[in-house]
Amino acid sequence: MPITDALLDVANLGVGYGRGTTALRGVSLSVPEGTVVSLLGSNGAGKSTLLRAICGTLPLHGGMVRSGHVAFDGLRTDSWSPARIVEAGVRLVPEGRRIFAGMTVEENLLIGGLRGAGRRSRRKRIAELYSTFPVLERKRQQRAVLLSGGEQQMLAIGRGLMSGPRLLLLDEPSLGLAPTMIAQVADVIGRIAEQGMAILLVEQNASMALRLAERVIVLRTGEAVFTGTADELRTDDALHRAYFGAAQAAVSGASA
Ligand code: ATP
Image (spheres, rainbow, N blue to C red):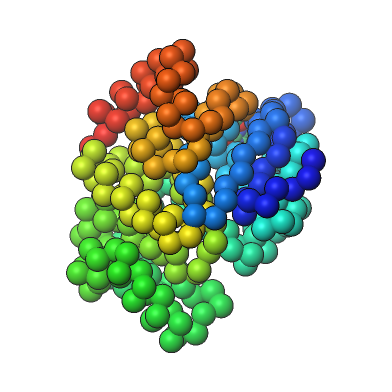
């Protein structure tokens, strides 16, 4: 299958772990620059597996691509090392934020920009980031542990941006956040996409995913059961009821 001109192109992807488990079957998606694409799915649907395939980390988990391809910027990357994929411009902001709690906001950002950037360009990137995330500038000297959950998530995203990626993979950025915080994080993600970033947003929280995304893919037990626009998903009654019942419960159970 030819590679499309979208920045990220996943086509007919099949992934397995060991000899037995098939975790993804025939999954296709593409993420053009300046676009948010959301990947929805409940536990075990295959979201982490897809992220691993894009980041080149499947072998670390005993998994392998069995069919199809992953391509970034026109080149097949499914046999590349994770380091080469990062170098090419792909950055994962993992679930659970993983910021350095004892360090200040600014120190966390500086660490995110260590790869391949001089002191001056890191300072320039931080200045650009502060204009997208004014809250991080206000709290630049505060230790990260003192930030709210939403601010910590913004810091994790900001740190991901410090290495100058072209594709940002966001793994459940709404996890554990109250609805008001989710709205703020969503706002920032939307602004980053407007600046030209390609974003793959992996979520269980359907309301956030639909609000931001131009296209949505719903995975269920390793297969894409829906691919289309957010509006099309909202009007797909059966899928809406089957998926959104559980997702809305997850939203109302979230805390700050
Ligand atoms: P969650 O939100 O719970 O992390 P997910 O949508 O990310 O779920 P995956 O973690 O990708 O789903 O799992 C997809 C399938 O692959 C599941 O059946 C899971 O048990 C299996 N799986 C995931 N990782 C491994 C592994 N390292 N070895 C074997 N099977 C795995």
